Image (cartoon, rainbow, N blue to C red; front, top):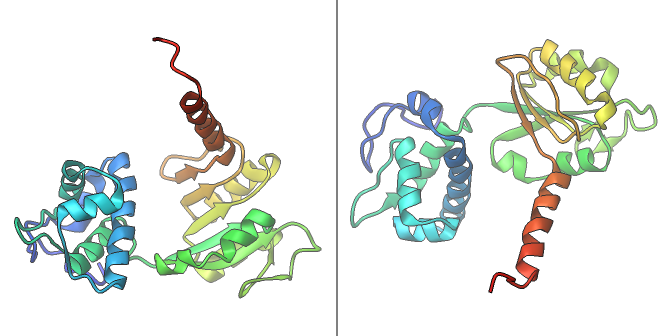
Length: 234
């Protein structure tokens, strides 16, 4: 893998090859690894070279024991009394998460959400290059969004091949999302993030992640209501 020695040796502890350990990481730990990586990159920006598990756990909002267990999945244990080398651990987590690969992202849907995603600066800093944005509205096709020009969704397959896209974000209405998803899969893209308010069906071997903001707000409302309702069990 680029930017990381994937051999078993390491400065900070025993490390297994990243390609082997990535398959063993539980989904909940993967989600927390992204938080650790963000905290580590903040430390790097501040010029910090080493960090203790306690400090990194506090910055990430988890317990030290949870942090150490999660980092054990990527084979990095740190050194007692010394902590973790920030740059090394950041690179190693990035490799375990697949962020040292060349990820080219296309966004289908140039409405308010799609345009906001296309303009988001945080993708590039995390290794994701947004290379195309599509829409079916001929009044929108050809317009500029950031440095991109909106392509006609009729040319989806051609543009995906030309740009080497290997991830697609669907920011579409429910009525058209499945048809577009099928075209994306048929074009050979097997990593899809969907904001469409519908359950999409994909074949085995296709990685589909769904973001449903309405559902998340409903869950948040439930917890907010519980926090505001007096305990009636007393």
